[in-house]
Length: 313
Length: 280
Figure 1 (spheres, chains in turn brown, blue):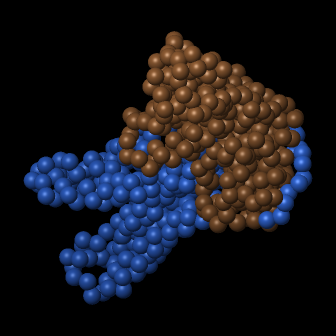
Figure 2 (cartoon, rainbow over the protein chains, first blue to last red):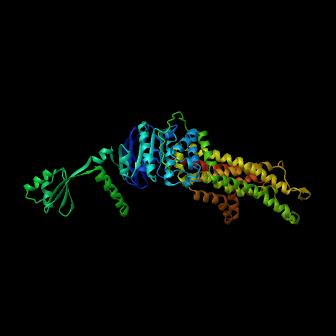
Figure 3 (cartoon, rainbow over the protein chains, first blue to last red):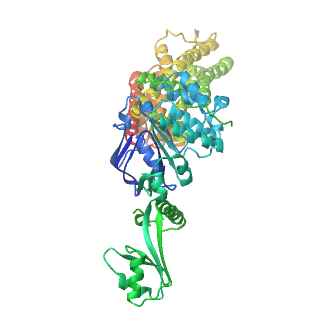
């Protein structure tokens, strides 16, 4: 169980994580979805106490991570950035971590076999491929037989066999009643592995829903209207809960009214319609929009571009 | 790499070991001994301590018969056997920096602090283990350096006396053992600098500047100022323990070494405060 409350992290002027509140439940695989740079890794560092929150707090199994007498038995984590000394062998890396908790060498041997690094355990970690590095990181995460397993982009650099292995492993761990929390910037990966999703963009919570809901639940319903008298139509349908946005010459996206209501209003006022089409956007569409925004954001030079608020509905 | 399908993972709740200071120290010992760079640096430190005592001893012993009376009178058999210490301090000090900066540069520090989130036991563990390893290697090294140099020098005489010193001569045991203590403190001073600066380049530059660059700069000051300041530099203060007699502009042997210990403690205390607060 991971509980974040109003978690906020600022680095100087930049806000990496903003007012995040969520709970990661045991027994299921929870995906942590967001575009690159959206604050996933920062959130995971906050959970482990590697970074201190600017505001709010995060607890694991009811306590701050640093307050546990045996933290590796509570949370096992694979961090996105390499967290291994390049000059030390995989075996000695795991041994040094195990010794802090009095975990026996036999457990180190077991895990090396489990993640399939038996043949390279004595090689220096600096010579490892990305995939081997990920396997070593996963072995380190499982060293303490933790209640919470937290993996940042675990499938990065893994071959298809390795990816399937990770998926099975995550599901097995969750089925044993553990809390499994894994991040990815790929919706397709999440759809295959996760049961529940926490979605963030630019450090803010966008959705905290089941994977099914994320894909199918409409986040926004609207009607696309094409008319040579678009301006006139806007005036006719104006109301407190109605928004009409011009998305092109003579094209409106109207929220707050059904297609029937708009059509009736147009007929009553002799307004010509060329098109009247109800549409809906799923949360996944919203996520895709967000990702596209991120790409635009990186390409443009404007520092403050805060469009994701509109998609957060 | 072949597919791995051995699931599920063995669940052995038997090992619910807590993090303790001795366990963290054992972990730090494993980290220290499993890096090639550590072994090379320690070997270099030992070799320099002994080598740079033996070489000048050989040179002076060979030239003794042709040396001028002034040169003979100015020759210090004790200092000669401890020249290696002032050179080897670089190896031990740099290794001290690396013991912690290497974790920051590779990202290992995140694994370390995820396992020991209280953090300070890591600093105490590193200081304890690395300090002890340095002392255990430095002490035999200075002893070997001393006895080897004196063995080479023996048989050469000045005013009818053999120039070789005995370990029981006044101040000799203090200087030789003190040389090992000096190296240990410099090693820990390096560790403190590395922990404060969290960068290999920064730590080594700072160490070299403090040990080797700043002290001679006092020569550009008016001599009375320079003489007043110079004894208080860490390297000058600490090396007072290796001097016999009572040379001008130096602190007393134990006062000097005590001051170096104070600088080292200060560096480690600053590192400890920062370690608790900073993000990694």
